[in-house]
Image 1 (tube, rainbow, N blue to C red):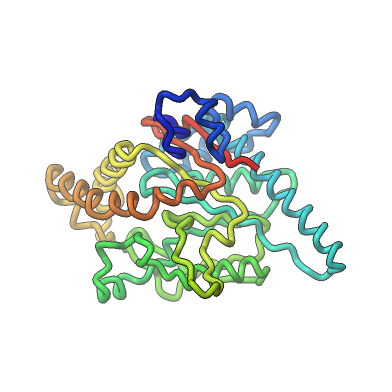
Image 2 (cartoon, helix red, strand yellow):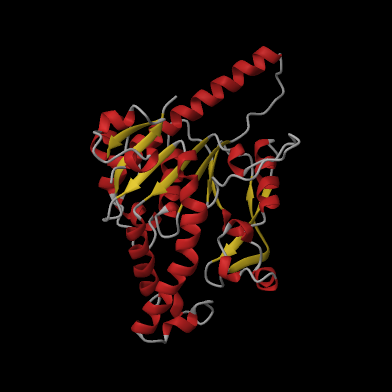
Amino acid sequence: MSIATEIIGVPETLDHFQSESYSPYHFFSSEQWAKFRADTPLTLTSDEVKRLRSMGDPIDLDEVRRIYLSLSRLLSSHVESSQMLFNQRNRFLSMSDVTKTPFVIGIAGSVAVGKSTTARILKELLGRWPSSPKVDLITTDGFLHPNAMLQREKLMQRKGFPESYDTGAILRFLSAIKAGQPDVRAPCYSHLVYDVLPDEYKIVDRPDILIFEGINVLQSRDLPADGKIVPMVSDFFDFSIYIDAAESQIHNWYVTRFMRLRETAFRDPNSYFHRYASITDAEALEIAEDLWTNINLKNLRQNILPTRPRADLILKKGKDHLIEQVALRKL
């Protein structure tokens, strides 16, 4: 099924152009999208791409050329336009002592779909543009409630669901970023111990661009009847990206990654999942399937996938984990 059909719900029999006419998006194949890179230079090496990609993600220099050079060019144009608008507004308001706030890019999508790789690749590419912008990357993992609280509230089986995050802390962080405050602290998370690290923070000091990555960053919320302000995380985004793939493919990637982690990170005695390193393959597969079906699949269907139409750009992956279609919201 094409990304156009999925997004707007039209019959599969409609052709590409007829489908697009009913959608708020322009749709491109990866080959069409690659042409938009123009003369954008490739500033990453093969070794750097290998370092930046997550386990199981086959992204290479060819994929960077096909997809990410065009995307970095598009994002850079948005950043430049935002800066021009900022200067024009200051002149309109006769304000000269206002500091430009960071351009915030939100990246959403399911677990195991490749959000982290996309975020890291974009961070490196954007930071190497001739203007040399300062680019920071923060994930929402650090804003999860600590395990002790999740256990107390019986939410460990819903870790990653919207209610497992300290949404207030996320909103305060992004508010401070958009206010241009210096040295804003973001809490740190350890995938090894599977928990927030107490009293450990990453400092974000007025970057030109902030990439904010997490599964539920495009989540909406109920609005009040009295018209009071109810901010959403996405209100602070200047541009948003959703990493998409078929449910069956994400399922396969998740289980494959779980089984591979048994041979790597899970073998560390300090790992929260160390107990899974010594069980049989059959037992591990059963656990992986259970975690997918009862936690991650439910979260995908109930909370993550419904936010896809809110993105400015959707990157649709094929079964080889590489981008096959791009949808860009029309202006």
